[in-house]
Image (tube, rainbow, N blue to C red; front, side, top):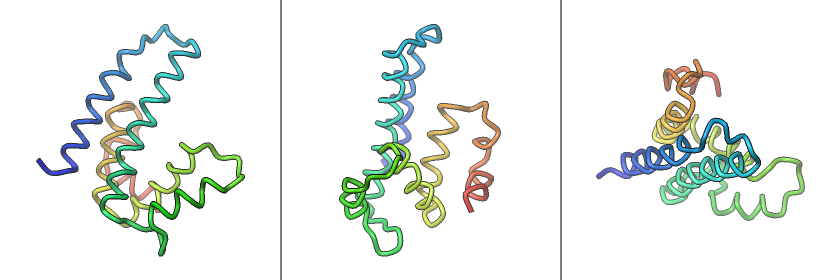
Length: 124
């Protein structure tokens, strides 16, 4: 099975867990669980990019990880990686497809996730 398809399958499995979090469970624990699952999806895609040796400029994912560990900005690790993935989307169609699949699976009602081309254009 192609790696992208395998990751999509893993995203679907994580979505099942995410979707099982009760709507009336707006408790801190419920939100924390949802956030952890979303982070797991992001980690899957980042690991894929690292395995493919994708870069931003001349910086590898591994190098970006070490730079961000030392960074003192106000962004959470999730937000930092979200920015990095958004940049990778512009140069790697497979990353665009994976991120679009994730967003469209988790939040299908959002207009932006209806078409991968619209998603890429929005980031450009």
